[in-house]
Image (tube, rainbow, N blue to C red; front, top):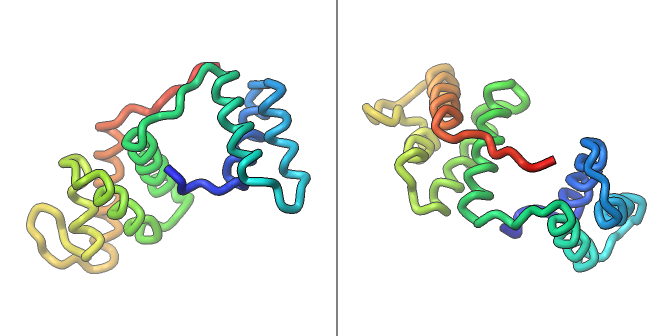
Length: 148
């Protein structure tokens, strides 16, 4: 989707190695962490090779965005990040996907409005509504499992 930078890709490779998924291309990709300024095209090349090694296909843009939204909702509910800090990002994902019905609430919450009544919410109500919508979104979208 063009949102990840080479640091994200290198961290991904390291996490795959830590999870026991070891390929030559993953090791090379992870080794770029030792370079001050890795070449982005080399990082992308070894990322694509690593995906091929693992037998994974690059997911569709919609699948990437939906998984990203799922990850953000998990972060909200596990208190990794403040709900209001990711609200705009969830709204942006909804916009990019052309406002799918299961993500419409984010478009109201970003304006501090309760999605069903359009009543203005105070900060406590907003946080509660964001957490409620995060739970509903997680319940509607199974976590993607990767082979390995």
